[in-house]
Amino acid sequence: MDINHLKEVTGIKTPSPYQLTLFEEIQQQVVNLEAGQQTTSIFISALAGVGKTTSIIGCANLIPDKFNTLFLCFNKEIQQELVKRLNVGKKAMTLNAHGYSVWNSYFRGVNNGAYPLLDDRKLYKIGKAAYGERIIPYWKTVKELVSLCKNYGAVPPTIANVTPVDNQYAGPEFYMGLMKRYNIFINPPDRTTVFNMATKVLEKSILQEHTIDFDDQKYLPVIKRVANTNIPFIKYNVIFVDELQDVNKVDIEIIKNSLAPNGIVVGVGDENQAIYGFRGSDIEAIARFKSLFGVKQLPLPICYRCPKEIINHAQELVPEIQAASFAIDGEVQTLDRFNLTDLDVGDMVLCRNNAPLIEMAYRLIGVGKPVQFKGKDLGSGLKTIITTSLKFSKLANKRSTTEDIGNVSITDAMAALGKWVGKEIENFRKVIDVDYIEQEKQLMDRFKVVETICRHSNGFTVQAILDDIDFFFGNTKDNDEEKVILSTVHKSKGLENDKIFILDRHLFYQFGKRAPLEWQLKQEQNLDYVARTRAKYGLYYITTEGLTD
Image 1: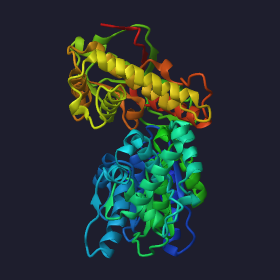
Image 2: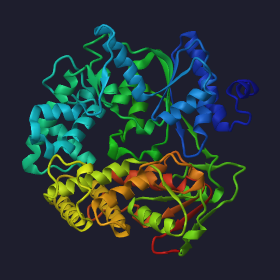
Image 3: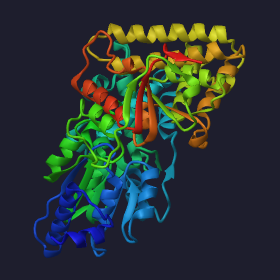
Image 4: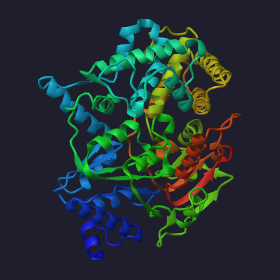
């Protein structure tokens, strides 16, 4: 292969030996595709900070325009970056947008051009119509089970003209597996009721084609693809899939059904950055991808983000990661004492849990340091547990929303929250056939966050708590360069910063009295690895106890 030609076409002037090997393999598969010979798909094992996007853009530049090429990615930010950098003619879409485009084309074709209606409250409306007020105490769990069924591609056994992924049918045995896998607690006496409700809601959701929710965008075209052969999956000669470690079973089916005969799939991912197993991603996604497409695996192990000392530290968890030849030394330090005034705006603090970050936020504000939290979903979650606990203690009625509870006193609200959390944890621990480690940890973390906000609040009612929640989590689009950035490790994935401070590292690998499942231990190690590989200059371990003002 002509190396100078590869450099010119890919746009990378000084490719690493690993990148050159990758480009040569892509070029060879393009030759095979053009000649009508058997092609081989590729899995790129792209470790943290390796310039993944630049490398796959280089690969894309090797694909002739005559071949239909699609990039599938997880979030809108990455999709928008790819659109800016890809050559005209190569399409970049999120997986959901691609699924929606398929379903939209099918639906309009059989409904005289009418569009399906997007409604995030679709499941709730179905549940309320079917069961009335009876479903309210069980709604959160019913919704979670239905959503996971859609991520897995499972269908009720009672519906015709649908085809499940991997022959998975929604029923008691399948639901019990989801409970075990995702730490879902259901009181044994309530299980039959919840399972029946989930199955009924899933059935009606499948039949209600004219209205779709977020999960339906991928789920409906996949489960109806066999019975409805006119579902228009556009076929692509080459498909790139980003963040492969985070895909679910339905995503894999979307990819498979979008690939032209003898097409090439290029999957890009890092098994060591799979941290969303609790959220529905398939912990065996990469292994499933390799098996289905018969790929050739190529490594991208050279990290261009982290200094040598940080790479040495990361190699304790992932020995394959390498520092770039030109990397600076950098530093990794454990600081027994740390003055908050030494944090500069733009610095980033990461923590396994939210509660220590909230405590630190109040202290930073106290010394005149503005803060910015990454991710706004915690705010809605905090409001939910406050509202739920007040309903549990009869301080609010079943129909109350967050707007209705502002006048309850903080003292009464904390007493109610404490009782509700205690009851939930008691329920977690009395059932020995299900592992609730992560759910218990998340619940206790959120309780401690609310407790911290109450302790620092200047008000006397729940409204003061809600105002502080909005202050911290209501606006996440401010200029990070003007604030100290606070983030859980989960929210930091894909981010980088010159200096990273890891707060309370002892919170990693906390599983309580029960031994963790193998996947839980692996995901905790992956979290640790993600945290260690965000810094471009220095990585500093600090503790709440060692902070000074």
